Length: 474
Image (tube, rainbow, N blue to C red; front, side, top):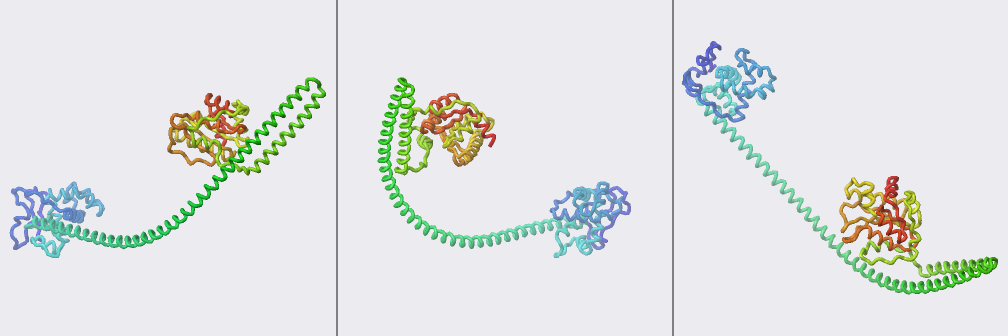
């Protein structure tokens, strides 16, 4: 054994025996500091060497007698093998650097386990085939002559291996990139071929579309010519209808004159008045029946089909059109009622038109929401009403331009925004004035000015609460 241990572990550290070379070797000038000489600073160890020293020490730590184990390491010696080197590394490294006697005891057992490699390290030589990390760890523990050079050589070898690993990794990555680039190049060639085929197909489709566009243009010109001819015929038939209506009005006035004469004659004699009134009523009924049959025949003769656009569509297309004069007798259909159940009755009328003052209803019913949420909730609810009743529904909001965030407009619901310089109230009155006399137009608004304005034009004003209760039932 190239190392000897002191015969008494209780001697002071200055009197303890340090490692000495075997017989025939020179004195340990680099192995350990002699008594009285200042200790050299610990060398900077590469991380693999430090981990190997700690691992060797942790492995032999349980085999040491408890009185030879320093106090800080006695608890570490009780750890499981896999935890001893991991958790006790700082304490083990500190004790090896600060306690030469403990290091000698550890070295004796480590060298015994190392065999020929340990003997070679103690002799100051390192086999060429030996692991440089293992050599450096044994040299640090045994500290023979030139042990610092062995550690430096190990560090250089470790760094060289690390550099070699980095270079190998870079080479591997470069090869992977080259392989990937070659694959990408092949994929790009395939995609280019596909794109060329796609371009050829698109060009062919464009040629077909051009031909279809030319055919559609010819069809459009022919359709426009037919529409012009139909418009001329319609103007002619409208003139005939106007003349027929004038004749009917003249006949009606004559009938009313005869009725007035009959009523005057009724003042002369009661019995004769009854007979004359009966005769005039019969004549008037026959005249009205004749007029109704004439109107029905005129409609069949003109072949008037239902129109695609409603009066409110023309108002929505041109807000700035001048207001039409209020037709005579339009106010006759106005009804002043605040009954919530009246809304269902009015919507049950044939071809009813529901006009809603949007923000007036939403701010009254769910004003705590944002304007976007208010519009979405109201439009969605009106879509349900339009689907249930089949009536025309128009909702009007204040706004200089169309807002963002609107939900898809449900079928049967028209959404309008007032233009700059115009309020929703004015647009509502314009919608009401555009409707023909006799049609049921229901305006929902709690604004008294709006209600009074539409009532003068023959609409049915209802409060916002009636619509809110109707929506709550949906």
